[in-house]
Structure formats: C-alpha cells, structure tokens
Image 1 (cartoon, rainbow, N blue to C red):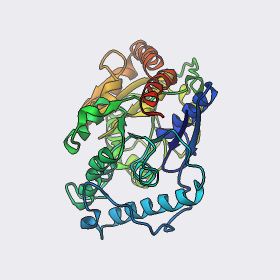
Image 2: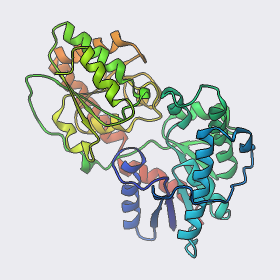
Image 3: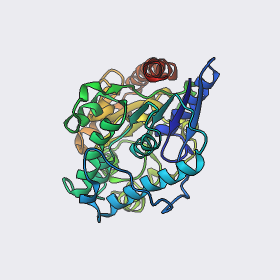
Length: 377
C-alpha cells in the first residue's frame, strides 16, 4: 500500500505533529508491502495560488475581509498551487492521511478518488481566541468552526487525538460518533531519563510563549512559592509573542533571578531529563504532547484539568491537576512536590510507566494500520 502523509508545514522541529509523523513514516517504510511519503507546503510559498477551492457545506465569502479568514483562504490557494506543481504525475497513492484541514481539503479537491483520512490535532480557533487574536463568537471563529463540518463532508474518516477534543468537535459535526480517537505516540528511544540529585528543585515548562499556555499564572504561583520561603529554579523553554511581557512580569514579581528564559530550543528532550518537575497551566490543550514527553523523561507532572491533559494525568497517581487560572491551587501543587522529593519521585515513576505503556509509537502504528487497511485500495 502506498500512503501519502500530508502535513501543513515541513516537520522541521520536534513537538506536535512533527514529533510523530516522520517516525511513523520510518516504521511503515520498513514494513513489507508498505510505502509512505511526506508532503507539505514550504514556508517560503506565500501568495502564489489563485485557484479558489469550492466549499460544499458553507460559503466562505460571507466571512471574507477579515484578516484571519483571508489568510486562511490564501493558504489553501497556495497549497493547491504547490500541489499541482510538485505532485504532477505522482498521484498513484492508495490513501492520503492529512494532518491539517488545509492539506485535507486541498488534496481531496485535487484527488477526489483517493480515500482521505484527516487527523485534527488541535483547535486553531480556540488558540486564536485565548491568545487575543480573534474575538470570541466573531466571524473568524464562525469560519474556523465551520471547517469541521466541511472536513466531515469531504473526508472518508476524521481522527483526533483525545476524547476531550472529539467532544469539543461534536456540536459542529453531523456524525460525531464516526470520529476515531488515536492518541499520539512517541519514539521512546528519543527519551533517556538521567538519574540526578539537585539540592534545589528544578521546575521546567516547554511551550510557545502565548497567553493560551497560562504562563502568567505560573509566574504568579512561583512568586507565592518564593514568598513562603521555598527554593526552586524555573526554566522556561520556548519563544513567542509574550516573551518580553513575561520577563517583565518575572522582574516585577521578584522571581527573575529564579527564572531562566531559554528561547527556542531544537531538541529539548535532550535537556529535559535534568529537571525534576514539568509544569504547564494551559488554558486549553487538545492533547498536550509535552506532558507525555516529560513523563518519558521521568519528570513529575503538574497540569491543568483541561482537554487532553486530564486524559493523561490521573490526579495524585501519576501527576497533579489544578483548575485553570487558579494561582493558589497551582502554587499548592508545586509546593507539595518541592517539599516531598519521595512523592515527587513516585509520581514521576508512575507517569513514566503509563507513558511507556500508553503512548508508544508501536501502539499508534498498530491502530493506524487497522484504519489504513479499512480504507486503502
């Protein structure tokens, strides 16, 4: 069977879709009778396409004139343009598996006779809303949530990464019960826990620095810890729109000396095992790959009780969950782990065992093979 894995942008860095799909390709290409290729839109391709994509379930023109919508529609045109130029004469696939709505809609339009599977990894509209880029319930959000039904009408099978996200999509679909859940998996060879003993507990978070990740709540919680006399170092790995704002906030809260801002890091999993506690108080998360990755590095986990995070963490057994935007609860959870290294170790061990069992790449390969066999020609 010959399968095309269609991404949005190239898998240039670990994390998200990029942490899984190239490893899936490697595994499938080693199997007898299976061949898998990757396809994506180069980041340099901008404003090239002129072909409009016909929509089946709604008229996107009613939302035209809004920057997010216009940019999205132009990116679809660019994907169509690039696909026609790059894939000409290479259409002999048994199945296409897309990992972004733009890739799915563009390729299904160009190759309507090839079965199309689409995995929806996250909610663009929730992210934009939480990050203050669009107005809640405004026209941009209406356009973006309409894409779920458009995908349902065009694709042979929708897949998502958590039960929580399937429930989120339910109001926008006609047959939500048909959506399959295949949770992400990871190549465990990338993660090598390292035994270490640090006199001062090391906290780490890894994410894009945007409001949706709740890092303002984390800094407030760390300020409470310092005020109560607790010792720690907070490592913030990642970059984004609010980095300068967060650095200023750390100074005002008098925790700048305890906080290290690293910026973007290409292979954070190589650095992660040297820390003790992974914490990320996200305001929304479809799955939260980084929690599984931190667990594979043998870190204790602290997260918010939302989306895919709450499906990974069983409170008090393999990590701690706190309500969204609750500074007191987050400070309390962190304080408990700072004060009790043995409990911290027990949670980290349990998280590691569960991650190795539940989020293995072998399990993802097995589940995908079943779906591919169902739809492949």
